[in-house]
Image 1 (cartoon, rainbow, N blue to C red):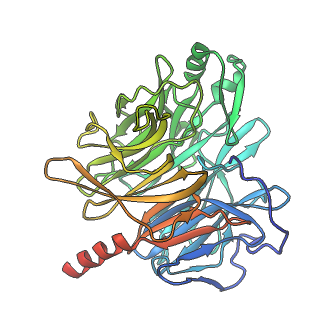
Image 2 (image 1 turned 90 degrees about the vertical axis):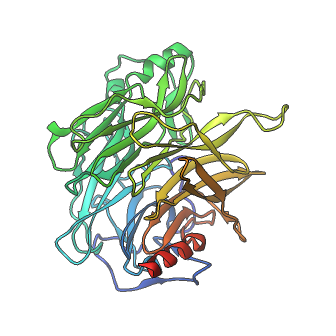
Length: 449
């Protein structure tokens, strides 16, 4: 599924203005059942989450039956048990260009009021390609200011697959994939389309050459174009980026890279000066995935309280039986210094794996989520990981009594561990629930303190 196609019936749209229309809340259906978030009459998809204590924000794409897409957000002040009514974020109706690998991204920063300020970044359509916009709310998500272009993202050409992190000063920094060099006409390889996004196809050498024109950019959201900079070239053009910050304010980025031979493995770099300079990229794992095209299936990253860097990603492996077809499997690796990673460990999965997410709890435990396809049905899966004294991760899949049918999960640690995903209802909604297996651990830690 690419840019979400319209479906459903027309209805009055809640939050058509950027101000909160009323004080209604979405009420939980019960602790185990979770709740649904939606802009009524819209197909709602691709959630992104952020939390600070009990303050939780969910942002997502909402597509009208006639096609236009907007960005909506909803806020909870009780760790996701109840949410205020959704509010439209983008001030120009229908200008969002959203897909599963490039959802709207949300970050929380210290604000002037009692709530953290909310910053949301999304991809917008343009006459010469696409650009990145962001809007900020300083009143707890009730209203958003006018959209502003992410510094350096207004050049001709397509860009997106963005992610956000906070630097050591509490400022939001954006990372994204940028294809401005492809807009010059210097590369003319044909483009193929999969899940709504374009990527190179055809001759292998041409594909590798073309990838050198796709680059990873970063920029602080401070309004200065001069601060946008290239981190790396040769990126896989349609896989999401991962961006995270450590306890010391260091920034960590991971992405799928195109290595010689058209190998598409995960690369990593770090910055200890707020994103002004980055270390030479390192390879997370020698997976040797040869692919003449973009799998649209990028990594996720998190940094735990001890400063260990965790990366999870999908890659192609041979099936477990000798005559089995290759399948996409999920792996985890950890680094203590950002210069080298542990050998990869496979995360238990039941089918073709896509769209991983990871979050670190205060005690070092990791929550990992992804969607997997089994017998034609896509469901959300979860695992828990803990790093032992030997530095090896112990990874256990979390059983679910009721399969969570859906796609594109998002994880966030509030006073609870919350999981959001796109339902397979018609029209689609954003489902959100607390993961009880982690909540019990959080409660024990809170009681001990």
